Amino acid sequence: MNKTFYLFTIVLLMFAIAAAAAAAAPNKFVEIEIGGLVSEKHALYNFIYPSSFTIKQYLDILDKARFDPAVGGLILKISRLDIGWAKMQQLRRAIHAFRSEGKPTFALIDGSFMPSYLIACACDKVYLQPASVLMMTGLRLEVYYWKDLLDKIGIEVDCIPIGRFKNFAEPFISATMSDAAREMFTSLLDDAESQFISIIVEERGLTTDTVRRLIDEGPFTAREAAIRGLADGFLYEDELHAQIESGMTRYLLVDKEYGREKPAMPDFNFFTLLFPQSNKTAIKSGKPKIAYILATGNILPGGRRDYPFRENIIASEDICADIRECAEEQTIGAIIIRIESPGGSMAAADQIWRALRKASKKKPVIASLSDVAVSGGYYIAMAANRIIAEPGTLTGSIGVISMKVVLQKLMEKTGVKAEVISRGKMSGIFSPLSHFSEEERAAMQRISLAHYDEFTSKVAAMRGVGSERMASVAEGRVWTGRQALENGLVDKLGGIDEAVSEAKRLAGIPSQSQVELEMFPRQMGFLEFIQELMTGGTFGNYNPSPMGMSAFLPLTPFLFSQIQSLIYLAHKERSLAILPFIINIQ
Image (tube, rainbow, N blue to C red):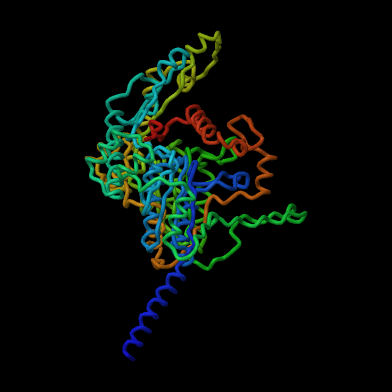
């Protein structure tokens, strides 16, 4: 009797303990909605667009939720996402890190192209909205050639490329793709497809042959995708919540604002208007500090104030000032420079390279490459102690080009005539009235070769690439991050997380220690914005805008900054270290 009583009591205690444990399990799921353009940084005036989120902010939310004992799981909503391959791979790794803590993850996608789907595949379960379509149609790279159109208009481009693959002007001087460009693009697309297929094979448990067959059969409705094993089902959002809650002993709490705490608005009064505070970080965390410098956009000489559209440019004066400040600041133990750039001015890139090399003598410098870090973007990365890229990063393009636009035929068509008075045989070398003469072409060829030699000599010195290998890795050829690692152009594969780990290691910071990332360029404050509004900037000898107009053009800042950069580079610069094409793999 006593034995039976004791046994019964033990069984009851076990059930009570199990019930208590289940009741204590976190019932809060973090819901993150990812949509639109995922960029590296906010607009300079981000109080105008406070809802925009950067890649780092998404990563910070995932990292915070990963270690938060109050968070039991993750719901990822993906809709109309515009994201590059490197950022996609970074997000996937962050989701896997979240899962490693034993917390379940669910993805709900409202129709999807491949980058969105590959992010969703990092979750435990992938669901589609019932009426959505999975656009699994393979990869495609399109390059547009404008020569025939320019011929009709009367515009010609004269260029001097150094490097077999370095032909920024090819779409403007040829109606078809060259053999060199086709070779490079085919290699890039093959490697991207290999990465793409391997992700689906690993995440969905399918064979390589099956994935290749499904690519040719797509796109798929939500039901078709689920039947073929590409998704775990099709549900509405409320149905997904109900399904998650059915496996819990308590109600489901969905937190849609997790990690999105908005900073308190500053107090505006007469005193603060007269005596504006420094925009430096006022709160001291006590953690070791690592500088995080964003270098995004075309590389241009001077400061941001020299250009009317300032959102997507790397102004050499400004970033060099940030680098020097980080090098001198004793509380900063290492520097991470996050690069997303197609290149630009050779002279400006060289100035940034020099600033980073001097900084690296004082503390570790890590280059973290985002979606694109080519030509001048790779040039500045070479100054770092370590270069880290994602497998899908586009990098390399070691080469230079000189070019000018010739408007002679356009002027003839439109009845515009020019009278010229000159002194000096070479005075018209960059005149739009004519092509390079033989003497002018020879001079530009000499200058471009000198700049190419400067570029490749830095590759040899910084990356240990011998002369016998230089022809195969340089010549303006673009590589994926995975190919760049094989060729010795980068040191590791990874993203921001790997860059932080490497910075801590080189700076002697314990690997388990938390660090504070101090962001550069510093966020523009309200009073600085008012000052920009009132004083404006200059562009060459023009003053076309009283402010950075892109702050008020949410749909066009990237377009305007690209046009501005290309006009400046074509008109002002003699040698360019810039991506030969705009590459977008869909």
